Image (cartoon, rainbow, N blue to C red):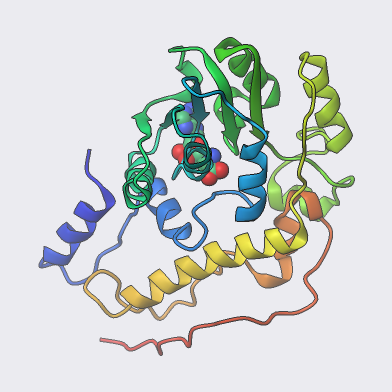
Length: 278
Ligand SMILES: C[S@@+](CC[C@H](N)C(=O)[O-])C[C@H]1O[C@@H](n2cnc3c(N)ncnc32)[C@H](O)[C@@H]1O
């Protein structure tokens, strides 16, 4: 499999002057999460509090389905020495980054490239699945998959989307989702209870967490784009680039806060490089 870095090096060596660069989605995700490696709108403080509720006994095993860069699992492993941790993800680049994070912290985790939806190996004291329920066709499929992998009495940590209030037309359009595509908080809890789980804790992303997350990924991509502008990799174009996240509509893209508008904008920005022509 050709990695993003190999593609970039090949493009840099190429004698062709004008190039359209296609970066694979997982590579874009890696670039986007440079400043916020948890791929969810939540603070590090709440991540460590929530994994603290899992309390896997020494000698047991924990599984993260769709682990991404592995921050939930790393927090679990760091606070539970003697527990075997396994992270599964389709993205080889995300797992490479997870391995680098783990090595930097001296933590031993098993990172497995693969489809979480077909994972059947093992029985776990705790299963984590945050932001990856689409791999199982939604919340129902995720709960069913987790149930098959969890030991009796085991714990699960699921992160999924809710509507905080009935969504406006603009919010539905921006998210390409209907009112019945996600439950509200009460509906989510009810669904989990129906599956014979007891709820131990919960967290609804705050507006501040959403802001941190959205600005972190849009800023990281902008930084990457501007730092590669003018290199062989990325020539300036006369066309006005399309914004990834128009600030005026940003809040409408956020499920729990759909319908709100951001009152203003303040924060670090990078001056544009004027579009030179050649
Ligand atoms: C929104 S990210 C969440 C990552 C991580 N759980 C976190 O909270 O930081 C979703 C992750 O699910 C992974 N994913 C999507 N479909 C998958 C599948 N069928 N099997 C394994 N991983 C999958 C993606 O590669 C991505 O890393």
